[in-house]
Amino acid sequence: MLELRDIRKTYYTGKVATEALKGISIRFRRNEFVSILGPSGCGKTTLLNIIGGLDQYTDGDLLIEGVSTKKYRDPDWDTYRNYRVGFIFQSYNLIMHQSVLANVEMALTLSGVSRSERKKRAAEALRKVGLGDQINKKPNQLSGGQMQRVSIARALVNDPEIILADEPTGALDSVTSIQIMDLLKEIAGDKLVVMVTHNPDIARDYSTRIVELKDGMLIGDSNPYTEDEVFTEQRVTGRTSMSFLTSLALSFRNLLTKKGRTLLTAFAGSIGIIGIALVLSLSNGVNNMTKELERDALSDYPITVEKTSFDLLGIFSTISEGSKENACEAGKICTRDDLVKATVISDDGLIKKNDLRSLKAYIESSEDFTKYTDEIDYAYNLKLQVFETDGTRVNPTTFKAEDEADLFKELPASKE
Ligand code: ADP
Ligand code: MG
Image 1: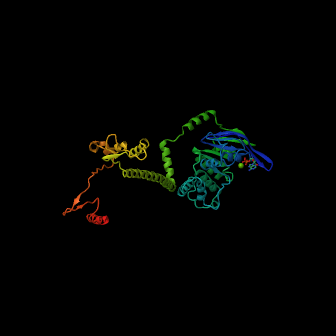
Image 2: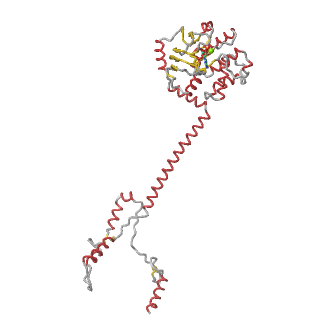
Image 3: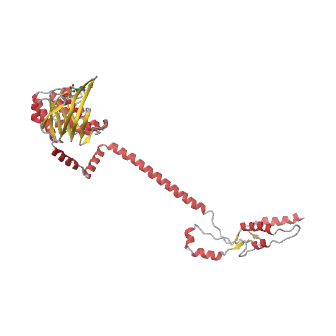
């Protein structure tokens, strides 16, 4: 799962270069307890920090699950450190003014876990390392062994796949060291543990593999990774895919842990969707309205078919053409036969008679007419003639009876 390829690390202090690592190539299994042995200053801490992403290599490559880290940027390293690696240091690296619980919780703050869930998980991890009843104490109220247990709980709380320990028993007496080592071995059950130590006895008693370093170089490996294992790991990792249902359940659980955020996202999302739906329905409605308006407006301009039709344009053109052809001699009176003919109701004249009777019959018999028309109106050219009992005519379309009488009264007077 982890592979180092010719890793080199050079420190520069001023102009002096120190080569801490001189080309380390090693491969770790998914589940093993590796001890890195070697004298002080041989590069053990440097190597561990590079494996954990706390420090950057100068040359070579570190592969995580077969993927090169050469192009890793800071966020990638952050993710790797936060989710996959747990650190245990010789000097515990605890925050002294915060409670034991808060110290363990701290490792979870970057993982986006809710506050209550953080507390629950931190308390659980502390119980696992045997400190269930000390969670509210400050670290300086604990013994060295207890403090190292706190730092083990902190490394475990994220449930990482890799545990890196830099001389975890370096500051402890032998009895406490044994307790801590037992604990480490227990939690290493399904993880990769890489532990730096300068105590060969501890390395021999607890680890499944001992790697020896000297002057920044690898000088011994008790259980090297074989080519066969490379092959089987590739086959195993190739198959480690989640079932659809599992991933669905996991994502649902993830949503539930962030209820507030999920609700807010859903709310914001629905505002967008509802907005789009509103705009669409509004535009649809306006479209329908304009269509209706257009139809109504057109029905205000009906097609009228009258009993007689005048070809006005034809009449005018006849008049103007005729005046050119039949130029009349000055001082003589001429007739205009064409004009007379044109104004007479006839087949070849310009005033034509329509056969309204058969048109009406056709309209009433044909279905097409009712399909494409809004309304059909018939008007009969009848003038309403109303008479009063004394015989005077009251015609609503012309004058009122009195007005008519007045008019006739005045007429003779004007003649005079
Ligand atoms: P170990 O943990 O095996 O005792 P280290 O990995 O701490 O050894 O150090 C290896 C070498 O690198 C030492 O010579 C040390 O002086 C040097 N070194 C380690 N860290 C630094 C640093 N930050 N700056 C300069 N030199 C360093
Ligand atoms: Mg060291």
